[in-house]
Amino acid sequence: MKNIEEKLKLKKLDIDNIEIPDDLEGRLRSALSLVEIKTQKPSHKLSWFLRHKTIAAAIILVAVMSVLNYDVFAYYGKKILGYDKITSGSFKVLNELGKGQEINKSYKFKNGTEVILDGVMFDNNKLTIMYRFIGESQDKIEDLSISSLKGYFKRYNMVSGQGIISDDKKEITWIQDFQPLSVIDRNLTFNILSNSNDISKGEEGSISFKINMDKAIKRTVYSKINKTIESQGVKYKFTTLSASQMSVLIDGTIQVNSENGKELFGGPIDGVRRNLKVELLESYIVNGKVITGIIEEQSSGLGSNGISIKFHYNFDGLKPNLKSLILNVLTTDDMKSIDKKISINKSTKDERVVPNTDELFVKEVKEENGNTVVTFIGQKDIVFDTGLFIGDVQATELESNSKIIDDNGRKILEKTYKFKGTADNMELMFKTLSHRTTINKPIVIYEEK
Image 1 (cartoon, helix red, strand yellow):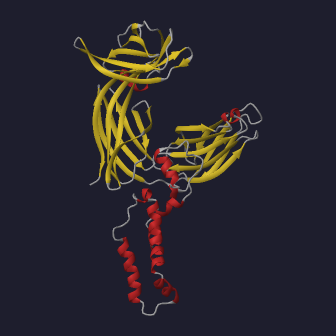
Image 2: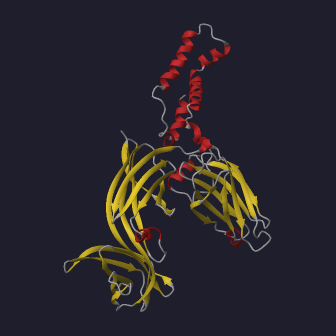
Image 3: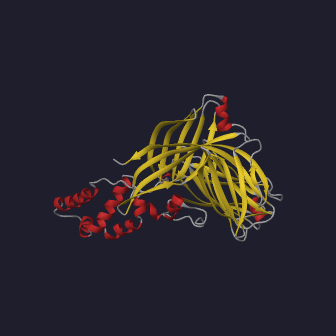
């Protein structure tokens, strides 16, 4: 029993979240005691059990865990190799613990390029696929793309993903998030299309595999939030939160009273778009101490069915030993694309960034120790970012700072950038400008009783 306990402690991160009945140890001990008391003349097999109580207790423990469907020994699963450089956060931790499901299947195209499906990891919120493209050149592997992921009952849409190419440019390693699995689908087909201009042009490769539901990452928290935050005449209703050690998904709807309001969330690309900024905080116990931290946001999205506007936020997974979970609704940003360049030099002063508006000005440009310092002034709620180009090369940003100053009783923003290097003629590049409204309202999702 001692050896089993020592092995379990090696994976405390995983085991901390398993809820074992308080009386389990007593039940095991009672079971062994009863065997001793009631059996005066034990059989050969039972005598072995009595002489090896430690091993017997371990066997009973494993049997009880199996009956109760506890995933205690899941850490004996294998880590899916080759993904350390591309994974981070909870996904990386879970892969280290062997929580992914190995697939190890491949398809080779006629031109020699190959796709290898190494494994998957999934919870109630999403399905993540780990795969690689391998070929004789970068062009060959970049000609491959996912055409679909299909089950028997539905087609799964991609949500987000990222990849990294090897130093020799002959292999791309990918992780790709898809919509969550249907409760019915178990057999999936991963389809990859070749867009190469050779023998494999238009060829579609397929890899079929079966989902092992025993490898699902168990959900830790599910909450029907049903809280509404109103700002600038718009109602943001947060409906549900689903969370595991792999991911956190928040869903909600947006209610607006006019067509102009709807355009803020789904109008023309060159118009003003409104973004709602939220923050998710968790408190958890590590070595007896309560730690509070911000859970990293991974993606967000909006969608409309013509009747209502829906939103979702995807976050990294929860830590074990959760104490509380709080959603902070921070700000809204009304963002517009300007995609503009402004020519500047060391004598530039009071230059408008956007013609015919007083939103933002280049107040002054100066040189300091061979570097370029640019100071802006603008409306108090303005949010922007910029880059400096010296010739065709983007200068390194050394630092930036901002503050609200008083201008004859009017509050305005002053923001200063310092860039490495200088020249007689330079350009500032702007992509977007936003106007920010502060909300700062917390919603308590979960608190340990």
